[in-house]
Length: 451
Figure 1 (cartoon, rainbow, N blue to C red):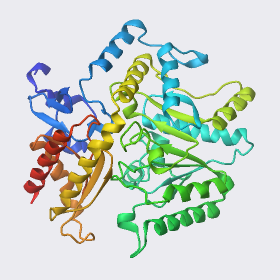
Figure 2 (figure 1 turned 180 degrees about the horizontal axis):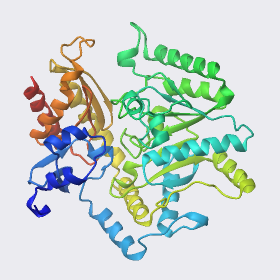
Figure 3 (figure 1 turned 45 degrees about the vertical axis):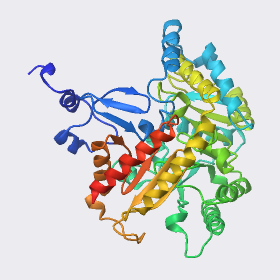
Figure 4 (figure 1 turned 90 degrees about the horizontal axis):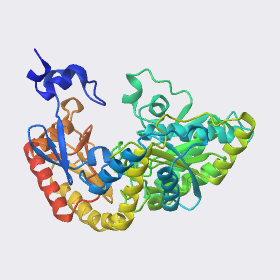
């Protein structure tokens, strides 16, 4: 049989290994082939249209057919399709992009290292943290503190940082250099009558105990997402980062903010660090920086990190880290144009306005008998599915109600994401209030089908 005699889905099954997919199930039932995008909608190979309630993977902030991004990529491809950044080489769009990112970032972050994905950016941040401490005469600072239920990527070390047992259990992952602090989920983990501030104090105390037990002078950095997106849109309790950072400063531990999801408007500010009062030594970005149109990520660092790298390479002769596609010209041109659009159209202001409507609609879902713990900020949110309104009465995990709801949503022309029995929604930032209404109308219909 010739490949042209097979459906696109079947051809995909025969040759393609998919990311984060039940491969066994995929070989039995096949998958979806997306053909094109229009605005906040995706259209599959059969012509079915879907409102993309997840901006693909949190990243297509400006929608799927922004002509300025397409033009930026085309013009750069014609002028300079590729050039590397080794041995001090650069190109105009990358220089402009570095300047623009520093201009948008919190004031104390002044230098940018480019990579291709969020995983690469986070691993780069860890390497720079190690190098910083080595330059300061403390090479023994190797351990990294992450958090239970965190997600920081899927390369080898980023998988270690991700505090999800499912990512460790089946891949024989070594986590010996990683310490895991408590997941700051106030809605499920607070004690009866405990305020958010008291809960944050307790978590900071727990973090202090971990540091003292392992030795503060062995720990290089603490890494955290402002909002734990893949963990289920877990917002930090009030005063959490203020108290955590006070502990870190006492022990000389660097703060790394993973803004791969939160950066560039998702929370209603340009960065989640601004929303939640984080003052990171290193801030990592990806996804929204280019609206997902071309792969690009970065680690933005404070002066003291940059100065330590300069001092160290003065002794070693080279900053021995980088990637073939660091600062790729086409990605740089697209990202630069995306950031111009964010500013010119006041996308952050739009998120604040439409986000209020989004959050209202999200919380209205709690009227459904199988929905509880609706939460979110800006244009990101989540709900938990439960068997009854008792928050401790969850569905049998083996029945995969979250996946079933995700399937029902697709039947209704809507993409959302299931994480166990938590459903996450994070549409493109350009969504209108009318489109928010359409999104939640389709979601409510999907919930009704699940009963």
